Image 1 (tube, one colour):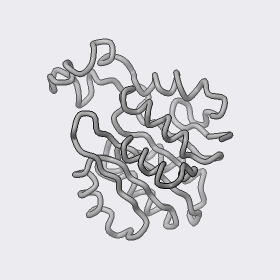
Image 2 (cartoon, rainbow, N blue to C red):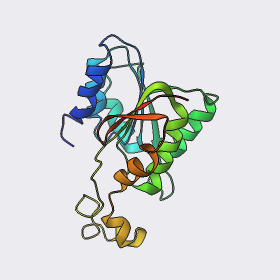
Image 3 (cartoon, rainbow, N blue to C red):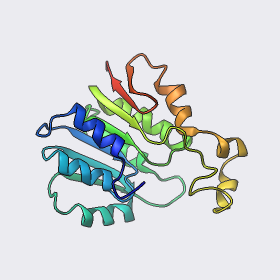
Image 4 (cartoon, helix red, strand yellow):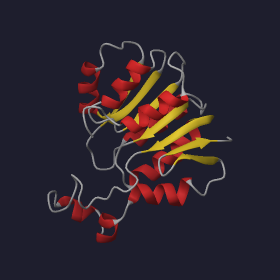
Length: 196
């Protein structure tokens, strides 16, 4: 991901939302918060819900301080079984299970073990007429920054099949695309929620 963030996401949003429109945007795994910064700049009335590790939240708060009162941060620890799904579940229950989000951008773990649950929870929170956006459809652990040749513990946490699998594609192909409540808008990336 460059300093531009993910242009395919915010360019699609610029074609979909008017610049002065209010909407709720959730991003899971915002890394350096460059996509979020671009969304703040393009959509001054948008409210952002950003989910990532605590240290990423701390850095993003400083980077995005020009946009006060528009961003809610949800941090999690580096503990093995902690993830943004815990924060998302708490947010869902604290908001009485109301459908809060107009746009969910899943750019986090890219693994089935984490992001299949993220999809399930986002499905419970995205409004009819809202969007789910999946980053890096063809991503694999092998060849990524998490390649077990560089980070040996990955080989202890995943099988060879899982390391070589395109896990984002597995979520999209196995869970999202077959669901009749979604329409594919951008191939392998953006899905419109039709019904709730």
